[in-house]
Every structure is written in C-alpha cells, then in structure tokens.
Length: 460
Image 1 (cartoon, rainbow, N blue to C red):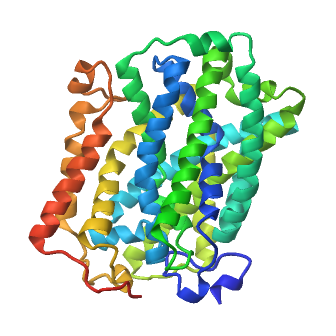
Image 2: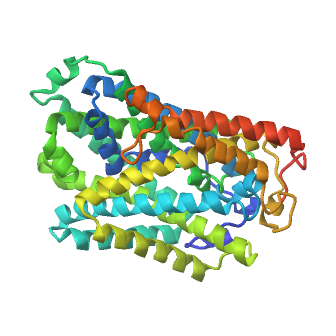
Image 3: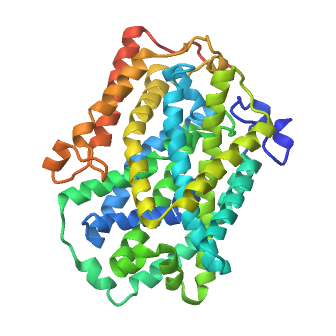
C-alpha cells in the first residue's frame, strides 16, 4: 500500500479510502505553524508602514485574517471529500487544459514566497550557526527539500513541533514588547486613518488567500466522512489565530524598533529574546521551514498537474517527484542568492500583485464546489482529457477575465494604483470585487449552461 511507506508515494492521484488517515485537528497545527512565520511577522510590520497606528493595526489584522481565512478554510474542506490536490479540482471549472492558467499563476506565487522564505530562513541559520547568510540559505533550501520529499504525513508531524515552539516563543516575545518603556505610549495612540486601515485589512486577507491554491492538499488524506465543519473549523482556527499573532507582533515590533526592525527583522527578534536568542532563532527556522515546505510541496503539485495535462498521465513516479521538488528548490534558491534588500521588497510587491489574479480563481472554485455541483464530482473524470469536464470551459474564463478587469480601477500596489483607489485615498477593495464579480458571473453562466452534479456521490 502507498500509505505504508516512510516517504509519501502518492502524488496528484486520488487517495483511496484504505489509505485515508488522521484527524482534522492536525490542521490546527499545520496552519498555525505556517502562519506564525517570520514572513507573517514582516507582513504585520507593513501595517505600521502603511500609516496605521499600532493600536489600530490590531483590529485590521484580525478582521483581514478572518475574512481571508474564511475563504481558504472553505477550500480546505474540499480535501477529505474529493481526495485529490486542490489544483487538480480546478479542471472541473476551467477544463482539463484550461486549468493550466491558474496553475502557472499559483506556481509563480509558490516559487516567489519560497525564495523570500529562503532569505529570511537563511538569515536565521546564519545568526544561529555564525555562518554566511548565503550558506544559511543553501542549508535551509536542503531542509525544505528533504521535508517536502518525505511528504504529507511528515509535514503534519513536523508542524506539531513548529506550532508548539512558535507559540511558546511568541508569548515570550510579546511579553518583552509589551513591557518595553515606550509600549504604553504606542497603545495610547488612537489616531485613525480610514484608507490605511482598509488597506491593512486587504493585506491580511491577501496573506490568507495565498494559501487557497494548495490548502486542500493537506486535508486530502483525511477520511471522506470527516465532517466539513471540523475541517473548516480547525483550518480557520490555525490560520486566523496564527496569522493574527504573528502580524500583531510584527506591527508592535515595527512601531517600537523602527528602522532597526525593518532592516534586520530576524536579528531584532533574536535580540528581544535576550539570553534565549538561540531558542527564538530555532523557532523562526521551524516556522519558516513549515511555510517553505508547503511552497515546495504545493509547487511540485502544480508542476505535476501541468505535466500530466500534457502527457495524459494521472500518476507521478517517485523519481520524477524528487526531480520536480529539487528543481523548484533550485530555482527558488537561485532567486534568493541573487536577491538584494531592494529586490526582495520589489519581488514581494510583485507577488502580492499576483493575488489580484488568484482571487477570481478562488471565487470560481468555491462557487462551483458549493453552489453549482454541490460537492459532487466524478473524480475519475478530472484525469480524463476528453471527459465530462471538457478541455476548456469558456464560462470560467469569461468569469475569470471579468473578475480581473473589474479590479483594475480599484488596485493599490507599488506596481500600479488605480484611479478609484487613488480617489479613495489608497483604500484597497479590489479583491472583494474580484471575488463577487467572478463568483456571480460563473454561477449565472453555469446555470444557463445547465451545469450540475453528474452523480449523487463522488466517484473515483
């Protein structure tokens, strides 16, 4: 059986009932660990940089994480029911070949966040072991690659360790930040600006939405009868609580540390730890390792799905799996080693810009799953080139393109600021429109075309 090997044998193929295992509570640890990473801390610092006070950053962080976490948790609930990776299921909406579009966009996000994670993780290893940061990045890439190669079961197991360690360390760091001499002054600053507040909400929501294209990959081995409410609930709790804690720490640290934090966030957090600085660095490494492994594993799933679309296969051999994961790690490491501080900032902006193109995909996927086909798919047909889901779905592309176009006047990023966003003082609501328009149009076109569930139950 594929499930008895130490190294995961399954790839993008269907997980049969006899290989399902685990419980939904494990999702709490996976997504708490993934969200309490140094990247999330740095993202939280942006709330203050954008113009929010430390006090008003907190509700924006919680609201944004809750909004984004709601949608990604709905994706997570698809895993046990279908037993296939998230992006394979996109073939039901976009068609067998049409799903390549969101797959390529998702792959770019995986590689980008993997690369930025290698920079921050490499800094942590550099500080802990007193080696050059470039060597630290190489070591971190090897660690991420090995964990991704071992696969699903070991990713879940490692996340338990990373989540507990991160929670303990973050509690200690909060104690240091909140007892700093100037902390009370920061929390008494009640100045409020609407545009940065709304932009902060969108930033936190966007952070959560980045997990959408691969969040079901880590619930697909759960038994099919796992209650949807439990899969959703544990994912939501881990994502929202973890993301909110990390971003809150980042906002407070940025307000207290200023340029010292912005220029060297890893070193700043280690200094906060005092004599326990090595423990802080280990926690940073473990938390970031979880996130980087998810990017490597998710990127491999995307590449495998694209390749099988071209070759007509439905299974990836272990040897090819190792090649794909290693290739993704090598590309990400190359970007990380070539990066400068300015490059990382620009590249992060580019990755966030890509999210304008991923929110319409998320809306189409969720509407199709919950409202059009009502959780019922012929899973075997997802692997059929000329199956019932077709090669391309024109309705999905129309909904997707209009969902992107409607966002343009409302976009607010360093790469482009739309006229309406500028008129609104920089307030960011584009992603909301992308979800509503894409989802609404796809639902209307699907009903007109008579698209519905092919069978009363999921079939292989």
